[in-house]
Amino acid sequence: MDIYIDRLNERDAQALFAFECNNRRFFEQTVPGRGDDYYSFGTFGIRHKELLKEQEEAISSFYLIKDGSGIIVGRINLVDIDPVNGTAHVGYRIGEAFTQKGIANEALKLLVKLAPDLNVTQIQAKTTSDNIASQKVLVKNGFERISINEEISADSGQKLTFFHYSRNL
Image (cartoon, rainbow, N blue to C red; front, side, top):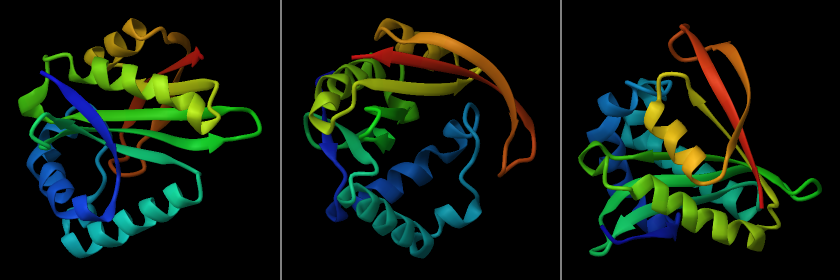
């Protein structure tokens, strides 16, 4: 499947909200949940505007992964961009209907290519220990696992094991 990454904008709020709602249960199987409030369009809209402000301030850079017809199939983001050290953290999620098609791998390749334009020279990532698919995508894109730790999820209160990765560009 051909995909491209499109920088987050206000026009995509409604389609992105539908994407998030449609995939909530699927996402929460492997990543900590975002809380019930996130799935109210009023709250979602406020958070969406906050993300756009963060993007304007170059703190983060958010992208929607779209197929050739412009349908949202996932998200990929660079957050906590540190222009002094050239570091940022990557996060991504692919909709359930679009998994196992190489989309995460291709989107991460595209993001790695544009990261230097954002003055990012090192990308860091973390994933839960049970998210094998994400671990494979990171390794396939040249990321190395650098550490493991346990954290208590702020949303669910459960203990999670995280694998931390890094890639120098």
